[in-house]
Image (cartoon, rainbow, N blue to C red; front, top):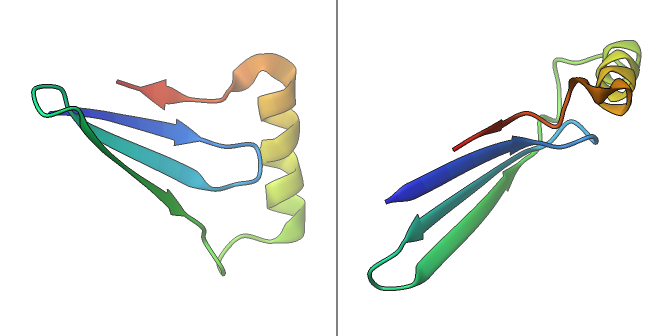
Length: 58
């Protein structure tokens, strides 16, 4: 199984899982609805725009 995590500029986390032998893939996007202020979201947006993202683990 291959799994990849991508932190998107809009604050969402995208998770993709793939089974290479069966060519099956699933994608899930996680959106945090509370806990981050608008100021903190803007701070992360600037970090990503300044080349500190998107973060990918594969």
